Length: 312
Length: 306
View 1: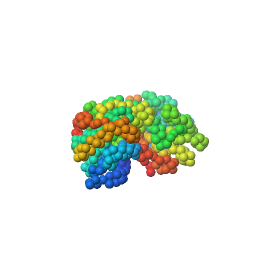
View 2: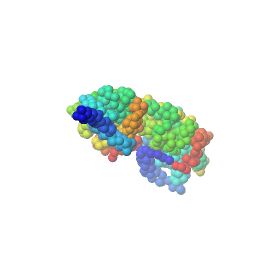
View 3: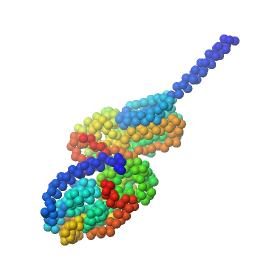
View 4: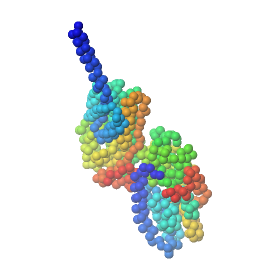
């Protein structure tokens, strides 16, 4: 009888241990983060997100942030999303449209906060577990500034057909250009070899959409464009000053801060559906006069004064 | 008072100051006390593209020199509203002034308004606009709370005084508290580009510059929405010092008012981008003073604060 009691007691201890272990693990909350691509724009959002989030949760229970930086393609985004769902993280944060859509596609019940999404009102990222912030840059201004520095008959548009937000930007600027009788040429970058498309035709200027792939290879793109003496414009900041002639961008750190605020609220129990999404619209305009000199472009003085910052 | 001023504003101010120093030495140095009667020094307030502006005024100065039989020199002031200081320090004889500075000049210096140019649309007046991007979600004053606004210059009716009066009429007396950020661009065109780009949510500028930009790029009209318009006021006025000989003042006025009646005068007007000049009326500036009162600051106080 005593042996039976001992056996029962041991089984009970084992069962209690098995039950308690995951509970102990769950005492530490985990946030999974997916960048659409490991590019400076999303890195700035993430750095600000972490700093702001730590500020907001100081003294609270330990929170682990698991960062996924997949190479930009559909399979990698999907794998990153599945991995975080399998980890059973408490919250997923995504930067950029493809990563966000990969998570939504998995139909998980884990709350999702997105950031770095272009024109999020048109990005099909709604859901009761989803909230976040995005940005919008008036692409018409890019055309306007190009036209103020040189005649534009043909505009090349670098985008990536596998990145949903990049495609939307391509379509928007194509429409705007056509309204002004500017021919457009689409340059779809999916593989490094696609950069050779930049060498085949002559165009007056090139617009670089917010594609992760394009920004992974931004130095190569600029190097080709420089040889062809073609000016470029971008809606992501040229953080490394690779040589984009003008950038009109929404400061990414603001999105990192807002995403952190949303994440903290969700972990405190607020439902994502109760947190309104937000689109940032304030922009900064940067002219690279060093690059202008290389391209033998003269910026009129009354144009330079429009810039928030000038690289010289 | 200024919060987060645009770098462009500072750059613009510095650039104009330097340029003006050069222009001043080129044009104004020959003027001396002994030959004041043989020369007139006329000031101009800066526009967005001062090179184009100088070109336009150069033809007019040359025409006036020929017609009056004396040398008419021009000097661009470094910014709006510098008129009071420059009239005193540089001994300007007159100036082409925008509505607000003309009002200041008439009130504080006793300047005589002589004539107003009529622009190519047949208007001698301008209005202030308060505008936003159509996709901004801003439809009225209550939507403006917490947003950013960009003015032109504290010494402009269209670009500062009118929006302040308008906001005041809607119960907004403290713009520092009401807006997330406010700044000055230094020119009407710059405020329009700032709003188009998203560098500011709300802009203020005069309708004539707005229309000129729309004519050169009609897509602008598809993107901007004008929320409010000010009453019409004289856009540019040639104001002359009272100390200038009355005969000369009358002669100057006659030359300007009749220049559209001669082929030479018409050619000069074309370069100047005007159809003709019309006689100024002092009472036209009363409504600007009323607007200043509505903004709870007298024009003189604005002048002192600058």
